[in-house]
Image 1 (cartoon, rainbow, N blue to C red):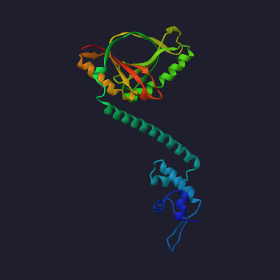
Image 2: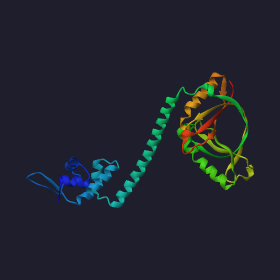
Image 3: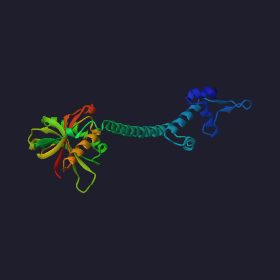
Amino acid sequence: MFTIGDFARLGRVSVRMLRHYDRIGLLRPASVDPRTGYRHYRADQLHRLHRLLALKELGLTLTQVGAILDDAVDAAELRGMLRLRRAQLRQQVAADTARLAAVEARLRMIETEGRMTTENVVLKALAPVRVAELTALARSYATPDIGPVIQPLYPELFRRLESAHIPPTGPTLAWYEPVEGDDDTVRVHAGVTVDADPTRAGEVAIVDLPAVSTAATIVHHGAMDEVETTMRVLAGWIEEHGWRATGHARELYLDYCPDEPEKGVTELQLPVVRA
C-alpha cells in the first residue's frame, strides 16, 4: 500500500488532485485509517488513474470520465479514442499555426507601409508567352485560399514536364480567372515558360498567354502572403494616374524560393486601360 503522497508521485499527479478525485468518487483510496484519516492506495489503482487522466485529455468532463470508467472501457477502445483526439489536436495546431503566420504577416505588412511608393510602378506592354500549366480551383482570391491551392501545383507541374522531356525555358508564373456564375471561386493557373509543341505535351496543358498592350507592374520582394501592401501601392498608382484594372494580376516569379519564401522576388502585372 502507498501513502497518498507516494501514490501521487507514482501517478505523476498532485495530492490535491487525488483528494478531489476521492471527494467526487472518481478514485477512492483502497483504505482510510479511521484514526488519522490518512489515505492509502494499491499499485493496481494506477491503472484506473491513468485511464482517468487519458480520458480527461480527450476533453471529457469528470462526470463523463466517471461514466466511462464505470463501464470499464478496455485498452483498445481507449487507444482508439486517444488516437482520434491526437489527430484532432494536430489539425487544431496546424490551423492555429496558419492563423499565427497570417497575423505575423499582417504585422509585417503594417510595419512596412510607406516604404514602397508609387514611383516603383512601371507601365509596359507584355509580350505573348507560351507556358505549360496546371490548374485548380480556390475558394476565393484571398491569400489564405490561394496559397494552399497553388503551392502543390508547381512540384507536380515540374514532375510532369520531366516525364514529358520538356525543359522550362523561363520563369514560373501564376494567373487567375473568375469562375462563371460564382462571385468568389477562382481558377488558379500555375505555369512555367516553355518552348514546346502543344500536341506533344503529355500530362500538362501547353497554352499561349496573349499579349497585353498595357500593364501596370511592380516588383514585390518577400513572401506572397505579404503581397497586399505591394498590391495596395499598385492600386494607388492606377487610381492616381487615371487607369482602370481589367482583370487579375499575373505573378511573374523572378526569383522563386519555395523553401525560403521571404527571399522571393515577384513582378505583379496588372492589365489596365484608360478610365
